[in-house]
View 1 (cartoon, rainbow, N blue to C red):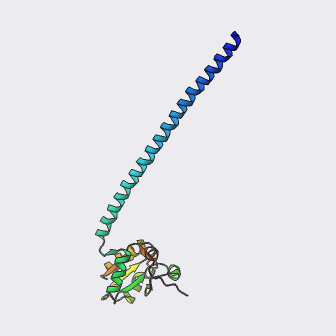
View 2 (cartoon, one colour; view 1 turned 180 degrees about the horizontal axis):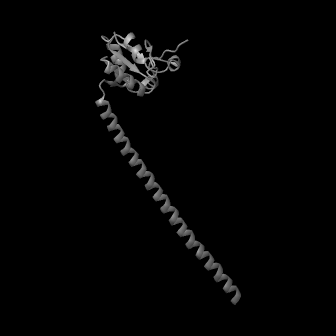
View 3 (cartoon, rainbow, N blue to C red; view 1 turned 60 degrees about the horizontal axis):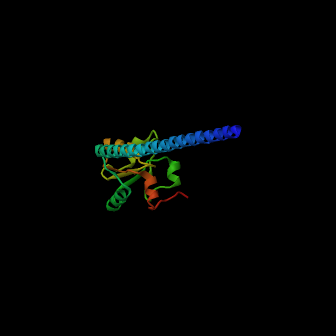
Amino acid sequence: MHLALSVEKRIFAYVQAHRVLHEKLRLVLRNSFIEGLEHVLNLLVMSRFIAQIFKSLKKLFKSMLPFPSLSVSEFEAFLQSTPDVQLIDVRTPLEYAEGHLPGSTNMDVMAPDFLPRAQTQLDANRPVAVYCRSGARSKQAAMFLARLKFQVTDLDSGFLGWAASGREVEKNA
């Protein structure tokens, strides 16, 4: 009987130790989960903060440009209200062939002859509207053209923004 009691005590002690261990493990996991959630929430708050900073910087950058950089709807309204506008796609000829705004002319801003070609083919007395794939190259082209005293307007979100909005796009056959 003494041996049975000893085994019973050992089993009880083993179960108790495992219960304590299990409870400690559950607390650690719960605390880790909560810490993980807190970390994720901190990251979300930080990403929102960073997004606000970038939004403010983008606004500041746009205000410093020597030409208007318009949203898709503003750009469309500008094109419709300015019948003598010269619409220029500053992407590569291959990009242009894959799809472009109706009525546009292709002049690759990265081509070495961009500036001389612009000076000879564009009328300095008529407004110029430029766009590229996402808005970066067109801002570069607009800066070049503005320095040459052209009245330039840029499509801020580029061809991707235009196409994503469901507006008309032409493709070369």
